[in-house]
Length: 313
Image (tube, rainbow, N blue to C red; front, side, top):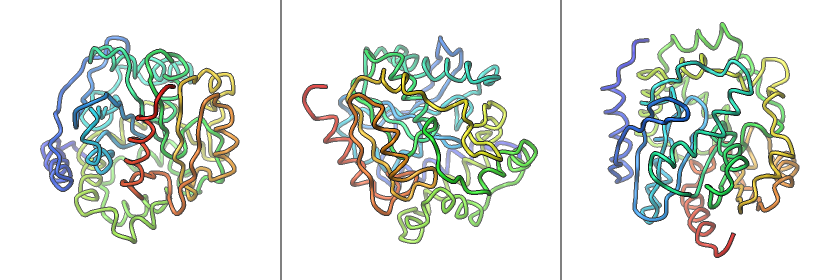
């Protein structure tokens, strides 16, 4: 599939218009990671950096940040995702992936001339934000994780998702233009079936996601960058598991809003993982999957606002 960035921008603009927001769009050159990325900014107030998951981009937070006009929400497109350039070289090993994760957020803060900020992550963005918080606790005011973060142990990963990381299969997937049926199946795989059935996933959100996958190089770039965080046999790539030593260095106040129906791990995995953080709170969200802010953006926004407003650390 040839990228069609003009068509993608139109789909993205329709989504933003549907939630009543016009983000400020800009490019940043990150000196540590040596890559140009695109960010979008929404609202005014204390700075909050949002780091998205795999094969998606910063616009995935649109329905949430539309409810947070009193914060300066900074939505990054990770390298290779959305409208950001890919890294010059991918992650040939886990050490390079870890080095990127530890540098990326502070790289963004430096280019925006921010001494510190609140931080929000999910899925692979959860891995990135936890690594950043452990490496640079002085730069992160508070941390929020939505759903299962890569680096936690997993439950039973669906076979179709494990099959999708087989190199030949994953590359074949980047050549097929997605359609509504394929996207609906993907939503259900990650525990968003109820949100889909209840109409919480709008026509504009669907259109944007289909265009992101079909009109940008996001999927191909993610496949090429590596490392695979899922494996065909075991599910979770154990070399990416976050150790208790790393988690113990996340010293700032941390809040986990975790869906009970998250296919990567529910209540038992959430509690066993979160207990390693020295200053963390866990809330299990009923009837929610992997992307909890899509199941209930009002509750997710209230959680952020209340947690960030609490006094002290």
